Amino acid sequence: MKDEQFKAWELTRLKGKLHHVLFTGVLSWGLPMLIFMAFMNKPFTDGFTSKTAIIHYIVWPLAGVFFGLLTWYMSEYKYKKK
Image 1 (cartoon, rainbow, N blue to C red):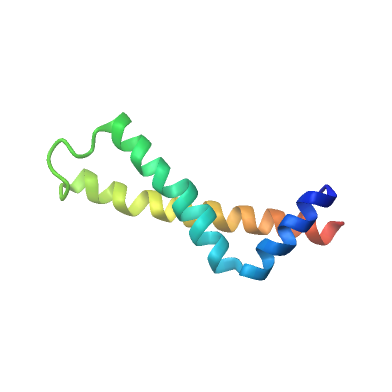
Image 2: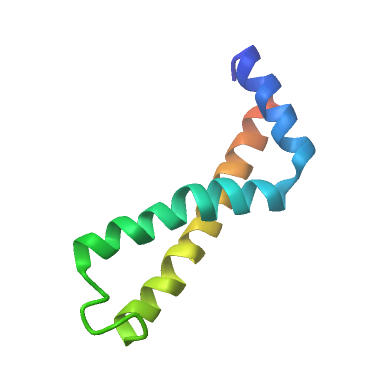
């Protein structure tokens, strides 16, 4: 971890894990993936409340949570390693 990354991670740590997971995971990764996959898979052809659409509403935000947690723990590992 470089010095600038180290300092940036210190600021991120101050905001907390929940903030990181919500903003980095759900909003910055899960939501764009939901939109991108909506164009790729066309889950809304039967409406916004179809079974396929509801699955997308559940899967991508959850994937964003997992992505946020993964990036949190990977960054924490690198931070503590230094």
